[in-house]
Image (cartoon, rainbow, N blue to C red; front, top):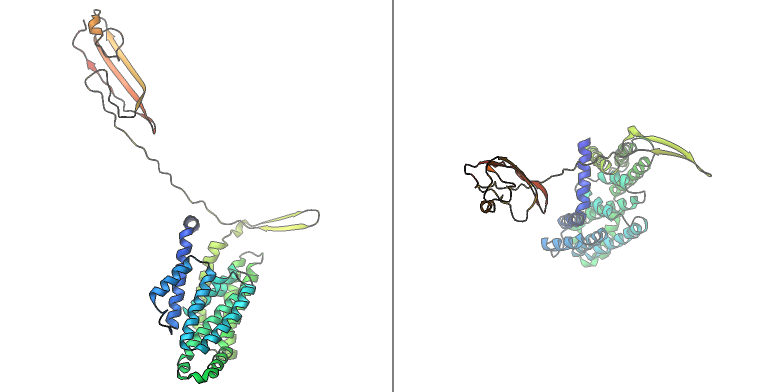
Length: 394
C-alpha cells in the first residue's frame, strides 16, 4: 500500500508541476476522439470529415474551456444532420435547445459529463458514468447524464433512419419530421437507460455522503447493483433487448474504475477513526474525524564533490604549485637542524623563505598545505618532502 501511496503522491507532484501542459493535451486528445467518433458514426458531410479539419478544431478546443468542446461537437453533429436532411437538422436543433436549457439551468459546470456520456456509450462502456458521477458530482448532475444519453440515442436514431430519409423527396418534409419525432419519443431503450443512470447517480451520491465507515465502497456496490436491477426490470417491462452479460461485465468494469477514483479522491484510514464531542452556547457537536492516508515521497539528495589535484613540490625547497584562483589557507613547516658552523651571510640570502634559522647538514620537512577556492574550503593533499642535504652551508 505504501508503494501505491507514493505513486499517487508522485503523480500529484507531476500534475501540479506540469499542469499548464497536461490540461491542454488532455483536452486536445478528448476533442480529437470526440470529433473522430462523430465523423465515424455519421460522416454525412464530407467537408468536415477530414483529418485536417478535426485537428484544427481539436487544437482550438485545447486552449478553450471544456464548454466550448460541447459547442463544437454540437456544431459538428448539426452539420452532418444538415447534410443528410434539413428536417433532421431542425429536429436535432430543437432537441439540443431543450437539453441546453436544462443543462444550463441545473448543471452548467458538468460539460465533461455531457461529452463523456455519449462517447463512452459509443465505446460500449456506459456503466462507468453513473458510478463516477455519483462519487464526484452532486445530484443535479443527473440532468447532464440524461442529456448525454439522449444525445447518444439521437445519433443512433439518425444513423438508423438515414436510409429511409434519403429515399424521401423534398415534398415529404413533414413525414421526415414526424418520423424523427416518433422515433425519439417511442425509443423505450433511451428512457430505460436514462432512468437507470439517474437512479444510480442518486443512490451512489446519497450513500457516499453518509458518515458510515467505508461509505464510498458501499455506495459503489449499491450503485452497481441498482444499475443492473433497473436495467433488467426495464428490459422485462419494455423488451429493449439489453444484454445481461454486457451489463454484468460493464458493472464490474465500472466498479474497478470507481475504486481507482476512490484511491485518488477519498483514500482514508478507517482504523484510526476518532469521534469528538464538544459544545458551545447554542449547540452540541458530534464530530467524526477520519484521517487521510498520506505518505511523504522520499527525496534523494545528490552531493557533488569536485576534487582538484594538487601538484607535489618539486626538488626546489620554496614553492608548491597551485591552480589559478586558489589561495593558501595555512602552511605548516617543520625544520630539524643539526649544529655546525655559522653560515656565510651571502649564502643565507639565497635560502628559501620556508627555512628559518641557520643550519648545516640540516633536514627540512613540509607537513602539508590547506588551499581554499571560490566554491569552499578544500584540504590539499598532504605531502612530505624530505631532502638530505650533503652540502654544507658556509
